[in-house]
Structure formats: C-alpha cells, structure tokens
Image (cartoon, rainbow, N blue to C red; front, side):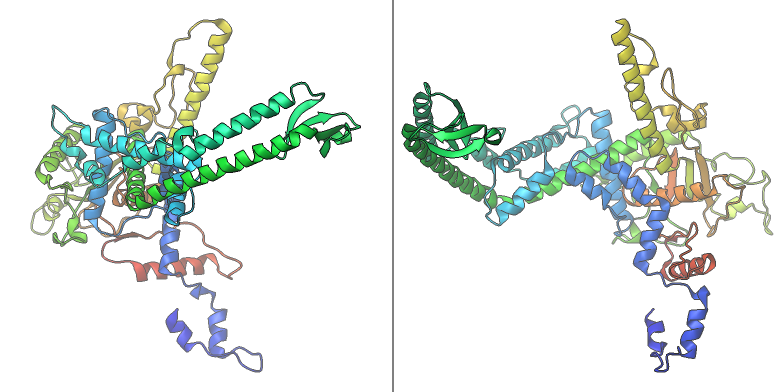
Amino acid sequence: GEAAARWRLPPSRSGVAPRAAQSATANPARGKDVSPEELEEQSLQACGWGELLEDLAEYASTRLGQEAVRVMQPPEGGAWQSEMLLDETEAAMVMENHLGASIDFGGIMSAEVRRALYKAEKYASLGGDELAAMVAFIGSAARLKKTVENVAVNGVPPPELAPLRNIVAAMAPRPEVADAIKSCVDDQGGFKDGASPELRRARSQRAAAEAKLRRALQNANGQVTTHQGRVVLAVTPPAPAGSLIVGVAAGGGLVLIEPPGVVLLNGQLAQCVASEETAIDAIRRRLTNEVNKATPDLFAALDVVTRLDVIAARARQASAMNACRPTFVLPPGRAIDSTGGLGGLGFSGGVDGSYDETRALREAREAEKAAMFPSVIAGSTGGGYPGDDGEDDFNDEGGTREEDDDKGELLVELAGLRQPVLAAQAIRAQRAARREAAKRAALSKKRTGLLEEGGATDDSDVDDDLLLGVRRGVDPRTYGGGDVARVKGPVPVDVFVPLNARCVVITGPNTGGKTAAMKAVGLASLMARSGLFVPAEMARLPWFDSVLVDIGDSQDLMQSLSTFSARLAKQRAILSAAGADSLV
C-alpha cells in the first residue's frame, strides 16, 4: 500500500485520470489490499473462532468472565505460553472432575463490583447496593481462594493443581473491608441503625414524628396518604376551612389537604428525614474511603476471579466435548530454544517448578491413550500414514519411506477430530432436547400421578456416543435415547500429515466435508494455542504462530471486486504474512 501511494500520480486538471491511474483502475485483478489486521480477523472468522468463543462464554459464570472470553485472542508468546494455559485448563478439570471440588463463583456480581471500584477510586460515594455487592464479592473471592488452596489428596496438595494455586496465591481479598461494610450495611443494601450514633438518633426522631402524625390523623375524616414526602389527607371537595390544599387526585375527585395541626408535624418529619439522609451520606463516604484504600488489592482480586472464571469455562467446555489435551510437535529441522518463542515446542512441564511430577503424570496419560487408541505408526502395516495404498514405498537405497521420514513419525495427528463448532451446536441441541423431554415427563407425571421410568429424565448433559462417534459403535449423526429427540452430531475425521510434508491436498465430492475438515484443523490449532482442549481422541500438531485462511467467496460489488480478484488479493496478503510457523 505504501509503495503504491508513492507512485500514484495527482489527478489531472483536465479531469482525465493519468494513464497509470487508468491502468490501475481498469485492472480489477489487483483487487483491494488486505492489511495484516484484516487478514487475521477474516481468518479467525472463517475458521469459526467467534462461534466457538460464544459457546465458551456460556460456560463462564460471571459477567466479566463472559466479556473476557468473547474478546479472547490466540496468544503470541510461543508454545511455552500455550502449555501454561493448557496446564491451567487441565488443573481445573482435575479439580472439578476428579477431586470433586467445585470452582464456585456464586454471589459474585463482577460488573457491579468493577463499577463500584472505579467510583471508589475517584472518591464517589458508593450506594448501599454497591457496598452489599462488594461484601459478597470479597466473601466469594476469599472462599474461592480457600477452596483452591485446601484441596489435598492424602493430606498433600496435588501437583496437578499447582497452576491454580499459583494464581490465587497473590490474591488478597481484604476481609477487613467486608467486615467494616457488614457492620453498617445489611445484605439488601440497607443501612443499619447502629451504623453511626447520628443515624440512630435521626431514625429515632423520625419514628417519633411519624407516630405524632398518625395520632393527629387518627380521627380525621379522609384517607391518609403521602404526597411529595408529606403526610396528607385525601378528602372529597370542598376542602375544610383552614386546611392547606397541597394537590388533587383522581382527576379532581379528591383534594389533598393538610389539617392545621399537621402542617407543623410534617415540617418536623421533613427535618428528621433530612437528618437521616445526612447521616447515611456520612456513612457512605466513610465506607467508600475504606474501599478506596483497598482498591489495588480488590482490582487484583477481581482480575484473578475473572481469570479463574475463564479457566473454569475452558475446563467445562472440554469436559462437555470430551476433548483431549493437545501435544505440540517440533517441526523437522527446528531446535528447542529454552528462552521461549518457538523453543517451548514439545515442552510439557508445569509452571511451579514441579516439572518432573507433571511430566510423569502426562506420560502416564499418554500411555493410557496409546493403549486405548494405538497409533497408526506403531505396528502399522503397509504405508506410514492413513490413506496409503497399503504397499511399502522403497527408495533407491532399498529402504522404506518410513525409515527416511524418521520411521513414519507424523507432523499432525488428529484422530477422531470433531468439528468444534458443530460439536458445540450438537451439545446445545441435545441439552435442549433433554430439557424438553424432562418437561414432558414432568407433565405426564402430574397428569397420571405416576413416576415414569426411562431415559427421558436423564440429567446428564452430554451423550458420550455423540462425542466418541462411530468408534464406540454408534452413528454420531443420529443419537438420543428414550423420549429424547435424536440430534445430528459432527462426523469424526482423521487428519494425519507426515513429518516432512509441507502441503496437503483434500479432494472429494461436493458437500463431502472438505471445508468442514479444513476449518476443523485450523480451529484445532487455534484452540491448542489458546489453552483449549481439542475435541478429538488424539491431538498432536505443531505450534502455529498464525492461521491464515482463504475459504469462500469474497466478491464485493461496492469495491468492484470480483471473485477472482478478491482471491488474488487475499492470497497476496497471505504470502506476505505467512512465515515458517504459519498454517495456511
């Protein structure tokens, strides 16, 4: 774009465009330049990243957690950062699924707390509801920290939870602030009488003034009501002589009056109400000052809670999809750099120094997976990867291609990969079907008075047959049980790429799943990079620093951009942005 701007000629005074400009305008094949930012955004959109984040946000418990999920972008810190995110996701899964400790965010109104902290930072007085939300947040944050730190197996903290313990270790919920607020504010945001001597005295005087008004109006003719904070009588016209008329009601059918003896009492009540409001304002300023002193720690605690909510959402989505942890593969000819960047490829350590324990546990899990799903390389007959013709390919030296390609090692190994967006849609549809079946069962029980048995009232969230597919002997395209409506799910695919391959060609008929398979691979790489588990039986792939996608028709009539020129513009941008570690 900058180079084009340098040679572009100024417009001619005669109104005729210069020849260079005419040729550039008349050449639609140049297309519109695509900036790197636009290319990244379009690639993420083409893969279905936005739809996946919307599904992930449904697993978040707080407002800020949902906001953080929806704006989440794949990290750029290398495989080391992705491994840390995966460790966090795995720790949350172990904590909730295996150790039975729930990551509970109940009572946290994160958006209200954030707004209250911003106000307190500027010394703007907080209201009773905001102070009550602050108390609930501090209590929930302290309880969440205690839950994570107190999880133990045989009295020993599990090493798998080290990432979560490291996150909550620096959190200081400041319970003394909550105690100061609770002494003055109740759970509904009202101010207690004992919050200050001034408030107690003002409310006592207000109660006495209201009692005098009730006695004064006890035997009066008319209906006692209030008008603009004053106690009045509603009588039919005409008004009694000597009364103060303050308004009308019922379209003029009633007159609001203050009898002569009530005017002074209403004035005294108004003074008591003003005194009460003054006392409450003083309490609000005092408590706001207490919150202001703790705003750095409370902001940090809010960030930790939001981060934990995002981690819990990743773990719960992985559990719902029956996803597996991806493993990063080092591309051929690349060396491991301990300083970071690409060097984190293949690293499987923890984040708290307990690398040996975490690696041993992960190796045990990999061995279990290998027993459940033997690799196509180990012990395979015929070709070194799926799709081979079943015959050994010999080179000129008499050896096999497997021996030359590091004994058939794969660069990408995605076994039983399910399209993540389609899997999420199927899970939501299945949940809706289960809720509908439960409603029908409850209605039938109410009508007949009998408890119906069967799968219609199953409270499980996801059918494993949907997620494991035909490998469990069940057609994943139609599943369900009992009265639960059968919902179509994604068909698992296997993607295997040899170690030294740089290009993969996918062929097949229309509507055969080629585009869905490509999007699934791109989305799987983005998920692995972002700390999300991949919905597959096995996931081994390199760490890609960018995923560049050109799928679909980008015709734009407003920009005079044909389908062909749009594709050329996109591919030109991809060639400029792609690097050695890019997935195109």
